[in-house]
Image (tube, rainbow over all chains, first blue to last red):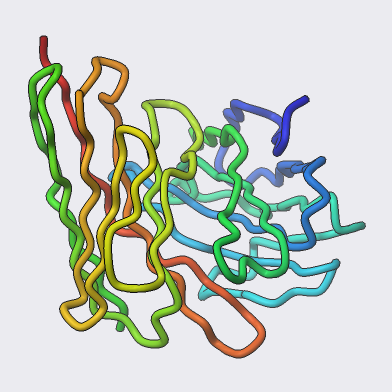
Length: 115
Length: 112
């Protein structure tokens, strides 16, 4: 009965490779997010989709490309991985673009390590 | 720019009360959230304030003063399992979007 699930949980790969992280939510929410949490535990928004439409796109290198096949899924593809991409990536979801008291619900994170 | 400040670390004793402060300077304030994050786990929602005053939820309470750009999270009857990071997040409203800006978190260590 996992609410927001991400795969894989751990990802170790070489610099220059291309990798994808998948996220699915079964909460019936209409908005999904990708966050990056760096080594200092600072959590920063990267992207947000509402009903498959991109609504937030922060200053993120274009090597990062989100894709939302439907409102329950938001995947993150990263090209040409760099050392600075090492971080924990969290997927989250909320209802109604997070209006009112609607909190965001987070997945368990994907720990990406670049060698 | 957006700025959210929290103390980096705090230590408290089991059974005691601790207050974690958060000050913010942001544009388009539309609510403040507190999240708890245990090491290696996902952030989990604790509380939400959009109007001035105190919101109480069991052992946890959160206070907001919009005019002062200030919030605090109060944890009572501390338990060892309360050792975690506590993240303050301000929601910005920008037309069609609601974006959360997080502080760097306060790492709370509860000692016996």
